[in-house]
Image (cartoon, one colour):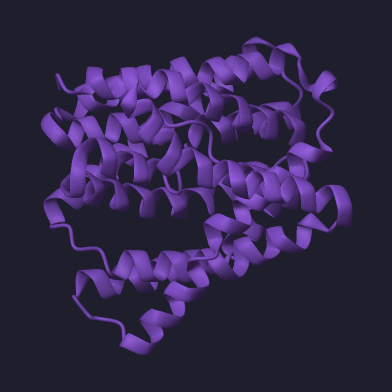
Length: 305
C-alpha cells in the first residue's frame, strides 16, 4: 500500500495537475491547440533530443542492446496493431490512432520517475537511453503514421523528412559517438527549452480531454486499442526479450518501460495532423489510470528475469 501511495504522490500527482490545468485552460480560454502542437514538435522536441542523445553516458554495448530492443519491439507492435485493425475493420483514422497508442508508450515523463523508484539509478540510466530512441521514433515514425490519416504515403514521408528532430538526433548521435561535449551555455539553453516539452504535452492532454465527447468515444475501437496496450504490448515485449536473449536488470527495465500506458505524444500528433483524436485522448487517460493497478504487478514479475 505504501508503494502505491509513494508512486501516486511522486509521479501521478504532477501528471494529474498538469492535465487539470490544461482542462481548465481549454474550458475558459478555448486556445488553438495546433499552435502548441507545432511548438512541441518543431522547437521543444529537437532541443530535448539533441541534449539527451549527446549527453548519454551508457557504453556502446548497452546502447546497442537497447536500440535493438526498441526497433524490434516497435516493428512487432506496428504489425500487430495493423493486423488487429484490419481484422476488426477499423476505419483509417481509428486504425492510425490505434497504431500510435499501441506502438508508443509514455516512457518519458511517467516512465522515468517510475524506473527510478523501482530500479534505482542504474535502471534509470537504461531507461533514459530508451526514452531518447523512443522520442526519435515518436517524432519520425509517429509523425508518418499520424499524417497518413490525412495525406498520401509520399506526402506523409515528405512531412517526416522536414521534421527538424531527425537532424537534431543525427547531430546528437555524432556528438555521442565521438564524445564531443556541448558547450555549457548551449547545453543549458537546450535544457531550458527542452524541459518545457513534458509540461506542454501534458497540458495538451488535459485540453483534449475537455474537448472529448466521452459518450461517443466509448466504442469497440477504444476498448480494443486499450487491450492492445495493456495486454498485447507486454506480451510482445516478452517475445522481444526472448529473441534477443536479454536478462537481468536490462530486461526488467525494458519490459516495464515498454509496458507503460499510451504515449501522451500521440495526442500532439493527432491534434497536428487530424485523425481519431477522441480515441487517442481517452485511450491515454484510461490506460494511465489502469497503470496504477497493473504496473506494480509487472514490476514485481520482472524481478524474475
